[in-house]
Length: 263
Length: 263
Image 1 (cartoon, each protein chain N blue to C red):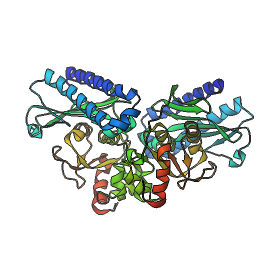
Image 2: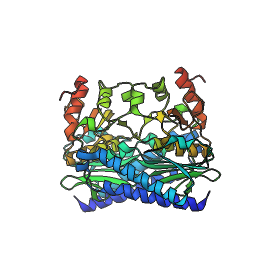
Image 3: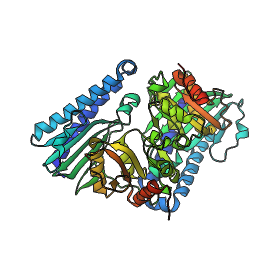
Image 4: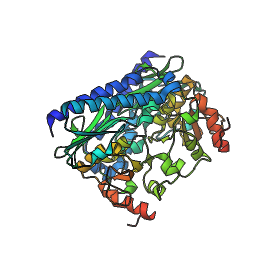
């Protein structure tokens, strides 16, 4: 773990988080009625500008991808350091709930995962991990709760997906589990799996900036991230993804494939 | 607001919360595999005993109802002070997530709402309200975000209910909204409506201890709590309930009744 870089990132995330909190402290009623969309666009843009500015200032030879104005062609892997930023993961929550959103940052080196940060701003929970060093919550090592069977775990994913069976057999997955949870943020839903608060998170489509940090943290913890059919994921190609507890990953694939779980 | 009683309640809730946190700090892996059910039963029981003990000690002539061993016949309203306790709302979350659960306490006087407390233990958020004094979060007045149209709000409720349309047209409600959220705790889902983080919470059945505090806080804030057909709720009779933002309440009833929203 490059301690100097880590300290910088924590400082940047904290500063960015404070800037996101500022407009939420004001009465948003007017903004909500007239310009909620403008507010989130503006804050998304400002936060990304700020973070990319810092990265370019201190690491001018590093590549970057942000949610806004990203040039994915630059991202083609074997290219030294690549930073991937999501300034606000959970924009709907940001404007509608003033809560349950995250700033997300991932670093790859020569195409390999290096570091991931998911900062739950309103709760002041910063989850981060470096390959070789482990995964931490505000400096304390994360010890995931273990789930050994999908029937003993909770599932997460967009409620609309489960309500309308937008991925084949996803409702069966819900039925086999102890129940469903959804918080509206992809990165926070991935964290729920990695900490064991849910057994699996199924998404119909995640972009690199939604996926990156979760992917790095999953790698460090030895958690699988695959397509729902079990095939591998290139994070630069949007598509359906499952993050799962290691012991239930094959169960999830089996249920999504066949609608059944055979013991 | 009876300040002495309020101070006592805050102290009891804090103490009860600390006692609930203690076993969660330990590695629950063993407990999860062998006796998760025992743990939650034990903690539920201990917490209720503690709270009821305090109430009976300081207010021996007050009536009480708890989730465990409750005698609802005593609850028949016009009987001075009645305390209703839910020691752990969100027991599944308590044991499976170590998060997203609440201690819930309501006080009625001569059948009328008097005070409500919903303590989100892991986040250390105590929402409370007294009739005549308002609703507060950790001492700060709660100013609900306003939602003026169901199409501009989020909905909550059990994911299984939406997935299998367990209440007629509930999936239509989800479709009209900006999306669904579910955190697995009835009391915390009610709070989401009362603060404006969601527009409506629909439940197929809530017991008095799930409902009581939410009902009191809703009354204070002027938020409707009704059956999904708009009829009034006797909290001592379990049945489907909606908590809604005032401006969307009729829209919710209309959608659930007809499957359509006519402007």
